[in-house]
Image (cartoon, rainbow, N blue to C red; front, side, top):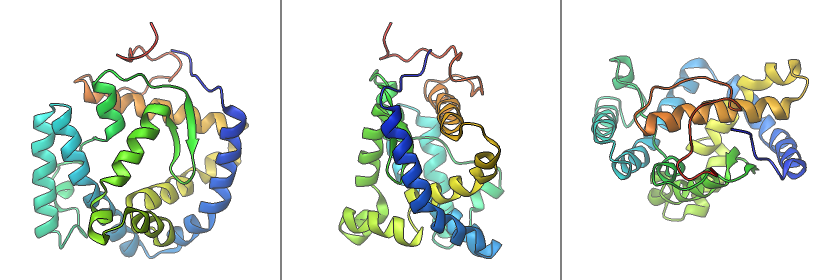
Length: 223
């Protein structure tokens, strides 16, 4: 399936702005002592669990939902509010589950590729899904105002969006230095990873094929 990227010029500009904006945050995260970074990472993962649970239920992935609920209870209690991924250390990994994935299961087409400020690469479907996920973020409900939650994400890397973005940016720095076209590298990597998550949502094994040659048919895509 060919990649649809009609807004490539704008997307490249947003990617460049993201690199400039999140770069300093990424440097701060990389300089954190290992134990501190690990605790933030585990807390970040635990904050995602309610959102993952709801989407797994909406996708009728009840086994995944049960696993997610168990992880959340165990990590929130024994793991000191999610600071320690006790379930992961026992071999129970985090499930996938977001509203973009749910829309895929419901048959919504992916739409063109876009790069979102702060959030990074997505399709139009996943961009809308990300907005819903941010609105339903448990940190946002805890604070009371989702706009405050979003600012907190960006400012202190305590929320899911910001810490994920800065972690990814740091991990991709070497690839950026070595890549002839970093934009194409990021786009290809996004589709490859996302297709694996979408396959999982419909009960297929995760694969790491080229995004341009993957055999996964989008249920809502163009025929």
